[in-house]
Image (cartoon, rainbow, N blue to C red; front, side, top):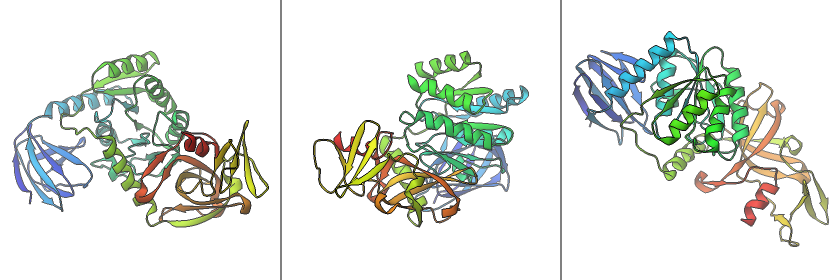
Length: 399
């Protein structure tokens, strides 16, 4: 199945993977770089990609299960506009960039394009659709050669935010973006989420300043993009406008959750357990045992942990922490993702699951932050309100 295609200059070949695309004749654009005759690219199964012909070309698609391909005529004008954008950025010496815009406007695609053309480190600051494979974290990947999409990159490190909603965990996202930018040496390009309305616009300005951006590229059109452009320009950034690709598919909330479920499964389905001390948990309220119960003091609120509700106050059952996404702060200066399996204050014991390839050892963990995403069967998400625990869990139970 799909086979070979003759692609006229200015036209494109859209490929949905998994597939290997080989250029038999001519040359095509592939994420900002050129694939010439005998060149190849791999397209993952989770996304589609369009190769645009610089000259009359012949492309052969070696398809995996479920792959497809079709010729397209639209979109080459966007490629030309992005080429002009890169040339202007390069000629003016801009090396620290942030890419912003509404949802599904092509931010990750343009980030990969800018990375490849300008040889930049990537800061992935979209905690909900993290293309580097780490939901609820800000990750970074130094320049290591060309890549078709951001998903093809291997992150060098990440910093825990704890939520997959930029709106819910804005301050921690900005802090994590600043840490990731410091870890990048030289130039960088930051990919961001699509939360740009209202407070989201100010959050994007904060992220831009946190990563030390010299210029912002605003994708898309409409009132939100216009307002964001004015705000960023007023904060002292050079603002460049760029068109969105015409072939983007709008992703539903279900699509986005499914994408994260696959990432969680890749991280934790074959993980290993790590036993830690509960004293390492940074956002756990002080507690004491009383009459067979555990009473947490969360500011002015007392939260009782017991099998049965003992009164009208805040209450949680034992095991309230199971399934929480967590971040382990390591001596190396980066964070690693973890999943809470057990938290037992009486025994001072915290058990977390870490990815099979994790470098985390007990003696290397400096602290633990409990996040506000709980993973259930099939890695389905439950979102909690950010705060100290178990107050955050108790509030969720009362909603």
